[in-house]
Amino acid sequence: MEQMQQQSLFDPRNGRHKKNDWVSSVDGARKVAYRAGTQKALLLQAFKDAYPADLTDEEAAVNAGVSLTSEYSKRCGELRQDEVIAVVWIDQDTPVTRLGVSGVQRIVSIYIPEES
Image (tube, rainbow, N blue to C red; front, side):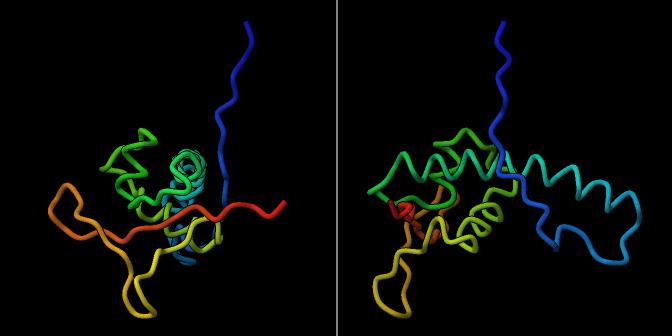
């Protein structure tokens, strides 16, 4: 039987724990980095699949099958930092938003296609 490997955008990004954290916290942050990478890969694929349409972080999480109780919005923030998705703007000071399931306005982002 062929073994499937789960896609991950593993990212040992600084900031997952404090510099003077307990060993257990550092270990936990290291373990979360792998799960976070998998979530980032799933979220990025949701934005790619939706392109040229845009999504809120919440919509991307739902489309990707990522739990809304996870830190999906942080992972989407990292994708924006990595410049693979970007906020959609109405004008220089106003981002496009849509209502989320909780009744709160959510910022909308779009996939940035790779240059060929």
